[in-house]
Image (cartoon, rainbow, N blue to C red):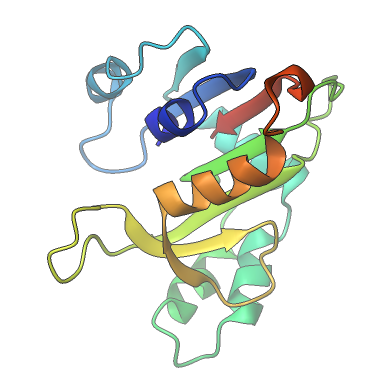
Length: 182
């Protein structure tokens, strides 16, 4: 994903922080290290969070109630409705936010409270490529709001859309923007 940011916006004055989190059965520090080796751009800063503290902090302090909002936006026969009914009963440390990209404008103040991102993208479900498509990042996404139903999209489409809206097209007008992935 972050590679798309640098390929499509090579001169963008951005800082990308990636937090690798063990969420799936095969996720561990070694897997995170292999994945992180692909991103060699000096603007990328990567971290491994085995305790899922970053995603838990975002779930608790920045996006409290995200699972309830998601559940209320999905009609009961929707295939993810039951999954989010159980998620809303979990605590942020057992069900942190992940598969999310956060965008911060330059100059955002960081203190003991996590600032709310300027824009964000959350992948709700992954279903892979369909009908021979070359992209393997197809799924359901929210962008900036958990209230509507998620939309079918792709990480690359979502990143390019938000980046093109946030990054000025004239190089001299660019500001540093932080892109984070909890």
